Length: 276
Image 1: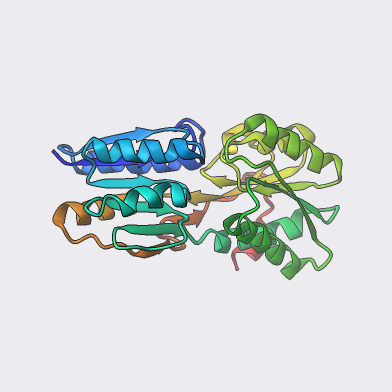
Image 2 (image 1 turned 90 degrees about the horizontal axis):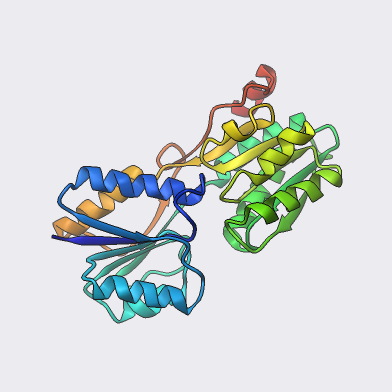
């Protein structure tokens, strides 16, 4: 039977990014019951990644999907396995058998920014960033542009913790931003650490990846929600049919990325203005 392998940057139980990708893996399994799927969690950005991707190839994978941007660590493997299809999330190059895909999350982030600009009383928005890379900058800039479209006095303070999944560091960053006067927290992280901070301190927060309101129902404003299920099923189907091609793909608003429903403490007039 055919084998498709997934390489994850975090644990499938993170409740965020990798959980969203794992839902995609489960959709593939349901759509293709005879297909073998394997995954490895928490792959570091190091030579260990190259070793794991090589192992996928050695095990006979027809398709390898990296759910984060591993750059040369995956490119070195794809160059030496031309008969295997490779896909890299947030990748930056296409070759004969390596394509990339990403989500246009900045549109939903802009809408959340409008809500932030209308809800902040200190005019200080805090952003908990993972890495200082373009895709994270895009999210931060979208929030600030949205906020300033309705509140020119709005500012954004950002802290990068150099990790996608580090609950302790994310919580510390959220706490530092709150202590510096930020009364609306957002960011690109894979767990709900700073939402818990917002809940405890009586301020607001918007999240990333999935609906996380259970971790701070009074603080929760919304989330950029991701859904890779339909996309992964289409890509695997194309590979099995022999029609897959290495291409760049953006998953657009309503087709892989969206804004979650508003939290229960978001005033209806603010929700209406943000949605307009």
